[in-house]
Length: 129
Image 1 (tube, rainbow, N blue to C red):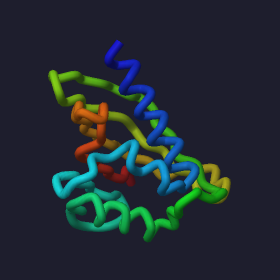
Image 2 (image 1 turned 120 degrees about the vertical axis):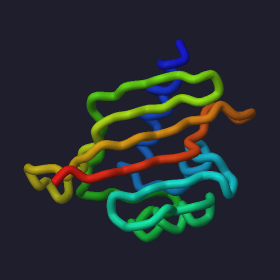
Image 3 (image 1 turned 180 degrees about the vertical axis):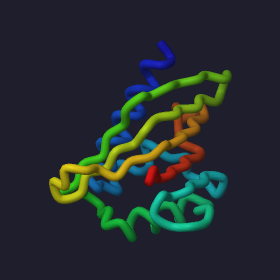
């Protein structure tokens, strides 16, 4: 049952990414300075809620979202539960402008169970060459 909740959270994150809608951000990520993120598009660790919002704004995310000619999806999803922490490992795919060859790589998403439900506390993206 717990895995189904996490699959639902993953689907909401994929929807967030494909809609570019910053209004969905609060429902996904822990809202404090402890949230961290490694992007596949830039070097260094992104630390804190506001820095993570800014990072997504740099990618074109806006309040209310927008239609993009891109699509992100996950495959080979593996979920491991550790009490208040859940670790998701998957392969992400990202297609730009109907390019037949998507960008891809591994992703690790760490969720923590909070008083507001399951929230992302860390994400780590890498690229396959």
